[in-house]
Image (tube, rainbow, N blue to C red; front, side, top):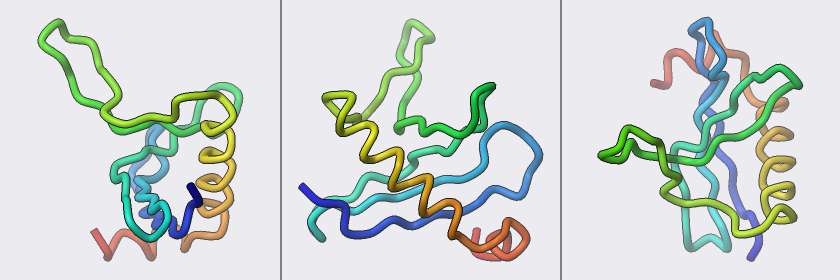
Amino acid sequence: MKITDIRVRKVAKQGKMKAIVSVTFDNEFVVHDIKVIEGERGLFIAMPSKKSSDGEYRDIAHPINSEMRGVLQSAILEAYDKAAPEEEAEDQG
């Protein structure tokens, strides 16, 4: 399975969330609402999730192993670095 497209929408607001990302695989399957978050040790991705009845957040879709998570995170963060500045992305929302 290959990543064939990454769309980054940078967030102009102050806070830890820096972007919302959609990733397409094999030009046939897309995952929306992956977040780029600024943590204590730098940027990382958070997979789309929803709040369950017990108040915990559970991933809706996620990589099965750490190798794929690394591939996905590297590709997303590279696309984030190349994306238009936040001020330009504000008008797209």
